[in-house]
Length: 591
Ligand SMILES: *[C@@H]1O[C@H](CO)[C@@H](O)[C@H](O)[C@H]1NC(C)=O
Ligand SMILES: *[C@@H]1O[C@H](CO)[C@@H](O)[C@H](O)[C@H]1NC(C)=O
Ligand SMILES: *[C@@H]1O[C@H](CO)[C@@H](O)[C@H](O)[C@H]1NC(C)=O
Ligand SMILES: *[C@@H]1O[C@H](CO)[C@@H](O)[C@H](O)[C@H]1NC(C)=O
Image 1 (cartoon, rainbow, N blue to C red):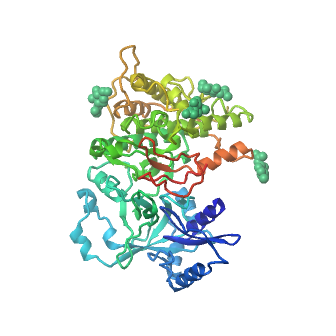
Image 2: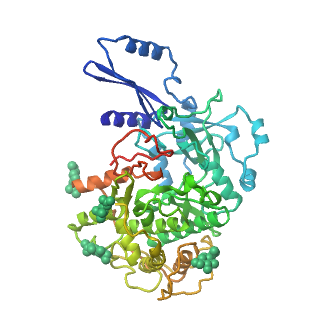
Image 3: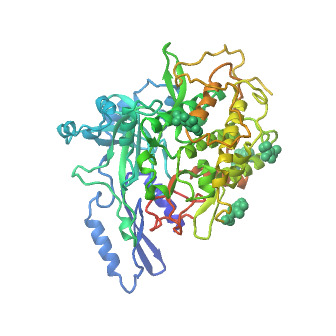
């Protein structure tokens, strides 16, 4: 079964399929299987020698079906030769990185397809500032479609079930430009907000450093049929179905981990936290999935026409609106990407509702994780330490075990770090020990905030758990503060947050203190820390392979954690169904 699940996931990665049939044969017994993103439906086994008619019937019916009935997605068609030629002719790119990525989409072995998007899914500038789609306008354009050409995906899920997210750097035929196309299967639940809707809301409130949607919507056939899953109906207490969803974004962001200087890293994170604050205070939207994959860098052009890489926060698929956070069906959930979920949500599931500070803590975990990966720490001093580094990363970010009722818990190491106000590593060289703006100061100031916050939190915690070289930037002129950064703030204390013996404050409850830290860092002369080679890069030990495997299957999860119900963690088994009780989905959680 595991082999078959793997093969199916490969097929789903390479083709545009909505569902899929397979036959499993063991000696003289046969099982018929139907796969879709909600799970796998398996027939009762039958003995082929004794009851061959079942197989004959299956094949007869299969032969009578057309390709769409067999699972082909009719909204994706092969691109014409002329279209492919135009696509290949593109030679204007936002950056060298964009060029490399775009070229990679046209790799041999990946035919170019045209994804058809109905004209009524296109979002106009007026609709963006209005914050909603103009339905009357949509009716006019009924039936018309826009084509987006795609080749090899930029990223894709490797699980046969779940959201099945695929991202493409696509060519927009109508506008003759490159855009980002993402398709996935969204949950059909009342408090689930399709990303297009969230972007409209955020844009109407002028939230900065977010992507601009070009088009978004549930996928419909030419016949008006919606693409949704059926496997969920076979569960005793059926969870919501999944609906295929596409969103096209104007911005193609570069992963945060591709930052070149520590200053760039800090600036990008600053922008993302600022955007997160605006989304919350103005848009009343809480992101709930802050991870290294959802924080990007984007080349913004300043007044002098120069490019500056700043932050871009994406993937609002797991967000909730402020007025929903108190609802029972929202309160008892945990969402995010395991490695970056806050310590208490991992260690004490179901105790704390997901609030602003959990996301702020996730930003800090992302920063720590990137420092371990790309900066000189006490772990990188010698080669022998590579293994201890990976062990440490595993213990802090990946570790999980299950309680008796099957709920995944983890985060014990993170919790200890937060409470002590310490880092999972010691930064070496660069800005270490310097009081001026630099990574060291940023990290220590943030840790001080965490310590204070967790001191305040302590009474609320359950007592028992449920079970030397050329320095970067040398010779660079002192930079003045970029005007593209978030507007200047009035920071009261210029020298880090003061931690007194007085009753601890929930300093991460809102964005004020954390933004103060970043604001302080964005002024004055930044002390650089050189980015070094990827410390998590593949080497040949089994340990490494395990870590690598886990990372490749690192995906967002949204878990329903009603007490006593099973959920799966990143180290769970290679199970291929939505647990029937979930009422929510979890992604490829192969360990
Ligand atoms: C590195 O520093 C961290 C934080 O001080 C410490 O917990 C860890 O044991 C150190 N590891 C090594 C290998 O020196
Ligand atoms: C989970 O693992 C951690 C660290 O190995 C351990 O301290 C904790 O007791 C374990 N929890 C359960 C519920 O087994
Ligand atoms: C943030 O919280 C602090 C208390 O922790 C409060 O004094 C401050 O006014 C809050 N700021 C905003 C913008 O709500
Ligand atoms: C890992 O293995 C590959 C081939 O199996 C080899 O070329 C490479 O040098 C090895 N790397 C290390 C760090 O040992």
